[in-house]
Image (tube, rainbow, N blue to C red; front, side):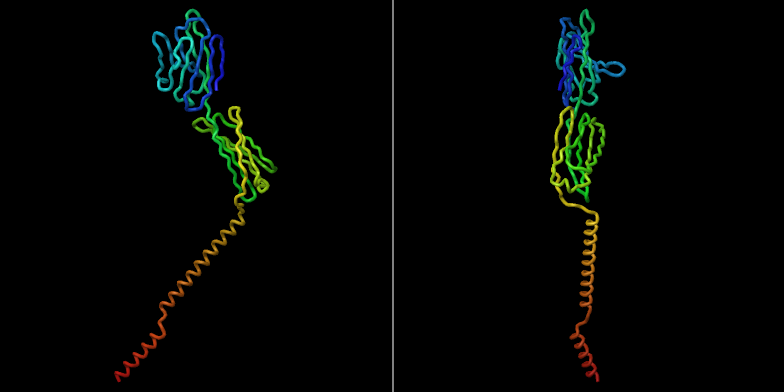
Length: 268
């Protein structure tokens, strides 16, 4: 996106570019005056900072802090452009192009660079007991604005924003629906406004599995009871098997008695 600005005899073009992509700024001197040197400066709170210059005598000269970040990519004394190879947050701001002319002195214009990040949106919902929560989260630069299209009553909305170190902002909006069952099968729309454009994100609310704490506790209790019963039966079975293994056979006992008697008779 670009906006053309005309300041006196200099035409500039503001730019809005994606973060971490190449970005160019342009100036054009609309005058028959002869320019001897073109200087690019970044506007700062205290005083402008020199970035690069061009003249026929010395060519392009880039100051050390900017050597690996940008260059003058349109070389001329009537038209000039600079390009940032990978525009970062540090490069966002306004810049001055100064045409040092013979006889009229410096004629300047201002051009600004704005960096943006397209929204990344997540939309999901979950049922729990008799409530339904619908969450829409959007991360972008500048901060996006979230709105909803949903039918029904008893709906509350909470929104929070988090600023990240990379300059993006995450906005999370949550709808709390008290009468969850009334929304089953209906469509909800999360609208995300960013840089003047509105995008709709739709989702149909599916019932899934209803969770109830009393019902959940009942299932857990039943499962524990079944496990305990299984352990008890297993223990009893092992115990009975152990008794059967150690119990002497009746026939063997009779044989032992007979053999014992026979030995007594032989002795006598």
